[in-house]
Image 1 (cartoon, rainbow, N blue to C red):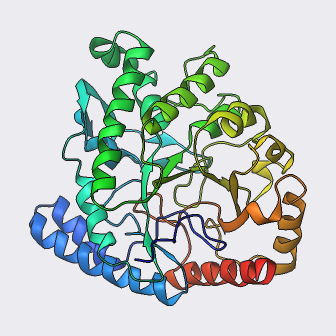
Image 2: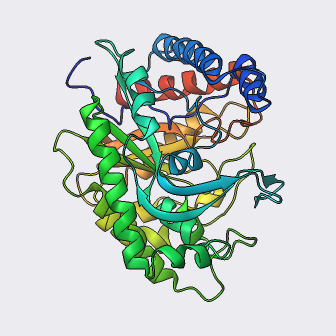
Length: 374
């Protein structure tokens, strides 16, 4: 690995990729107990090697495992903690258009995170680095973990273990510090928090269904708690570990969870969260304009998610370039980068486009970035 490589790159991506049919079939067989865990891992390994080869062939400097070992972008990480249980949902999470059928996940006892399986997942990708590429590990933000445990369906069970939000925040942050320590020891120097909590706050917490906040919740207090838990998890991290965050409004089978501009949550998100860069969703009008970027701490980096992963049609190159220069009114062009707005498969069902269309999107991101930044 070339030691100077670190995220974000001028042309970048969030992390997840469409699952190949072979992988989906193997995961289904495993769920039916038709193949063993070792047989499933062998398929995952092969598919990840193939994916990384394609990432390199596409000219990208960052490699990931595409989240091929996960059912969802966030819950699998939580399941790697001691003190967490989950089961198949009976109703899912209410997105716009269809329910997201992701497992119900809740607290059963004190949290700890020794021997987290994601560390071994990272080691596999780390071994595939070369002089032109560096591996990044994506995990849900600590705030996402906190939100999961205080949802209306979970709060009663959570309070049996942690009597206060403050105690829960401390426990989550401590678990993350363990995982971060172990990832660093495994060679990780690029870590990404994925965080949908801000999207619900930007929407005023109004999203319906069981994943809404308790009616009448103090959204300002929640915002402060999200910043607190994220920063506590980062506290004490090595200086050469780059930690970025990706903020979006939900991404499941090409449908979304929430809408709203970043402006209501720009402070504290852009002023006090101790990350290196923000990967931000800006692919349609649901995300609002760029004026919120005026609050980004000087010197921090912003990755503009201007290319959508939700639709197969390619964006107009000139229009995207114009939007980049519009954003540069608020953040210097040298601190701006380009990516899709989210992953291509935040859950294993994937978005509604083909693998060929996925790679065409990434080719467009690269082409635009090279034209804008050289």
